[in-house]
Image (cartoon, rainbow, N blue to C red):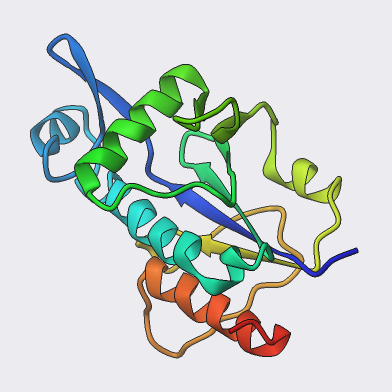
Length: 185
């Protein structure tokens, strides 16, 4: 089989909240009072981290060469498949609108055809899903702001830096490393 890298954005904060008559993507900046009122830590509502990471991944030469597959696994245990041809909105507000549409309709189609660009996978657990596919390498980027990460489906955990890195920078470093090893320019 062809070499491919699977990246799972683990613990992504993508959750909708009803504000008035519409739904919005839960966000620590816009919904801080709501989060605090419900006894939740506003630091956990960071969809901007997912947005930045997806921009890095989907713009990478590795993705453009067809060697990358991205999935998002949310804090609420929703697994989202990202079609490699998906163009992530550049602005955060448009990204939020797209994610609300996805979470409510379970898929987002291309404007110019029937192809699904984003879709919710009906899978009970990530590790069961990962085991049925064959991948060259699987990389999980953890979206936890806390140093202790507990997941039951990894065989080995490695650190790529002695310093804390943002999720987006981690994704950029990983794709760049695979591009260099696989000769993608």
